[in-house]
Image (cartoon, rainbow, N blue to C red):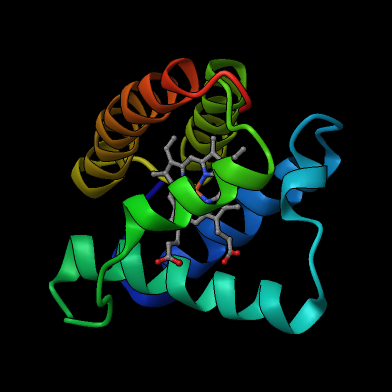
Length: 129
Ligand code: HEM
């Protein structure tokens, strides 16, 4: 098995990840959106990881806000974060092996912990959420 070496590899990883997400009954509803919107989301997600690994400048930011906004209409719970990470790790390990693969796994874990801490403090601060 080889490592993630290009944007094409990033796309394969993200697409594989979403094929598991769509089969997960608890996660699929979160990403139920019009096709065009989902395609835009996919492109931004490719950009995010591509930029992270290869410093392409393709991602302009707004990661935390994307989740804060979603969390207001659909609570992103700790359980959903755990499922997200399980699908990400499984997809990465099935397809690739190497330093970049480990970077994408550990970065997702780190971001998941930061975002979950932020969203859960927002949830407990607001009795209506
Ligand atoms: C565990 C760590 C996570 C990482 C690293 C991550 C990564 C990302 C990235 C890169 C984007 C694109 C951001 C942008 O558009 O600028 C995104 C958007 C989004 N993520 Fe996450 N995510 C994580 C967890 C989750 C979880 C647990 C959920 C919900 C179950 C979730 C739901 C969403 C949604 C709904 C969007 C916006 C989709 C849209 O464009 O409308 N994410 N995420």
